[in-house]
Image 1 (cartoon, rainbow, N blue to C red):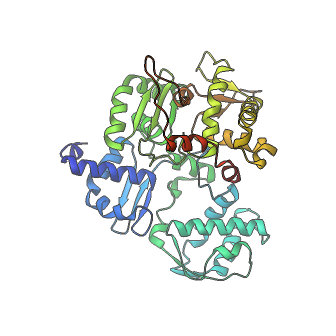
Image 2: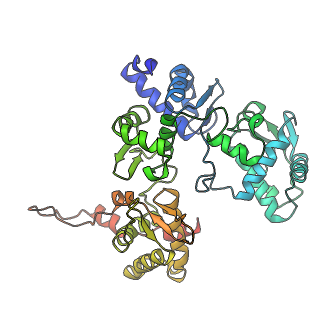
Length: 411
C-alpha cells in the first residue's frame, strides 16, 4: 500500500470514501446511485486498484462511464441477495443474460421474452406464460434496468408482469453486460462451479489466507473463529489487532474483538445492507428479544453459541406482544407468527442467528456477539447521580418504540 501512504490527508480520506462506495456499489455508474463519485474514483484509480488487489484480492475495472469491483459472491449463502428477486427471479436473470449475449444494441421486449424462454428450454428450465413466471421475469428485467444494463427506450418492462402482450423497445449496454458475471465462464463446468468461482473458493483466483479473512471481515458483520478454516482462524487470532486497525484505516469500519471472533460495524451505516440495531419495528423487537433468549438458554462449550428453537423465539415475541398490548396493531396481535418469522429472518441476515448444522438438529444457534446489542433500559440513573427529567422529544421517541410494526410485517 505504498501509494496510499504517500497521499495527503484529504486525498487519503477521499480514497477511503471511494473504497467504501465500491464495496456498497460494486457496479458504479455515472447515472446511478452515488454516481457523482465516479470522477473521484477515476482520479484515484491507481491507488484504489492497488488497495483492493493487495488487501482483498479483488479486481477493479475503472472507466469514465463506470467502475466494476469484482467482489467475491456469497457462494451458497442464501441470506445475501437482492430483496426484490426470488430464487425464480434469479434464474430469470441468468436466462436473460444468456439471451442478451449477441442480441445487439436494441431489442423488442416480446423478442427478448421469446429468447429467454428459448434459453430456458435449452437449459431444461420450465418457464411458461403463467402470471407467476411473468412476474419473475418482469422482476429480473427491472433489476437489469436498475443496474443500467437495460434501458427502457420506449415503453417499460414492468407491465409484462400483468400483461403478456406488453411491448417495449429496450437498449442494451453491451459493455456493462460483459462485466456482470463475477466468475470466469471459461473455467466453469456447470452452474455450481460458477457459483464457487464467483465466491473465490475455487479456480485460478483463489485469495490468500489473509485476503480471504479480510473479505469475511469486510462483508460479514460477525465472523466466528469456529466458522473459519483452521489456517484462517489461526491467522486471524494472531493478527486480530493489526486487522482491526486495517479495517478502520482503509474502509472506515470499527471492529470489536471477542474471544469467539470479531464483529464489525459501520458507524455511518452506509455499508450495512441490513441495519441492526435499527429503527424498524422488527429490528427493535429483535433487539428486545435478545436478553431473554440469552438468559434462558445455555451456551455450548465449543463455540459459546446458544441453541435456540423456534418455540423459544415464539415465546419471547409473544411475551413482548402481551407486555405492550396497546403498542401493537390488531394484525400483529392476530398473527404473532409473522412477527416471529420476521425476527428470525432479520437475526439470520445479520449473522447473529444461524441454523444448527448438527445432524438431527432443526433449531438455531445464537451468536455470543448478541451481547453487544443488548438494549439499555431508558430511565435508569447512573450511580450517585440523579436522572434528569426527560424532554418532550424523548417522551415522544419512547412512545414511538413500536410504531412501524404493520409496515414491517408486510415486507
